[in-house]
Image 1 (cartoon, rainbow, N blue to C red):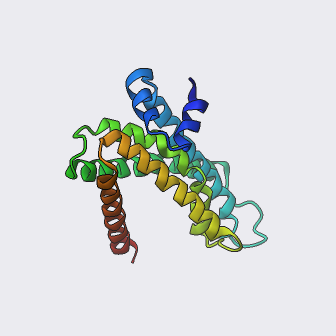
Image 2: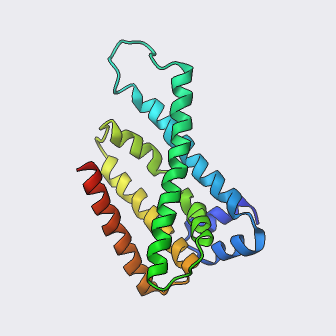
Length: 186
């Protein structure tokens, strides 16, 4: 079974795929690198596209090649930073509620599930420049629901938690990140 088949199984919420790939195929690190890196590329190119809405009209093309390259590379690096931070939060709370004490399975399962975040990358870039008209919020909500569901199954599989404990962990993660964002942004 290859990358495409594994990603289809992940997007179908199959929990067994994580253990198979991590223990048998040993491709989880490559899948993590591809999924997180592609998210960064999508975000970087989306940021370049939406940057024209921040610049003065009629200014031509003020973004040089080096600035475009910097935006793409920053998108990739920020993507890996967000993935690592989210994996650390998830590991701490899963472990706190009786899940596996190992960090690497959580990190790798979350990285494999990162494919579900791809539709959120252009939405995030559009949100940052306030291009939110029309069907933006329903599409954003659907993409976020997909990502949350896929991540839920990935963390449940990697941590070994029961359904009820995993629901509690997810609520705690949302509350913690929400409070953190309120303090940081608000």
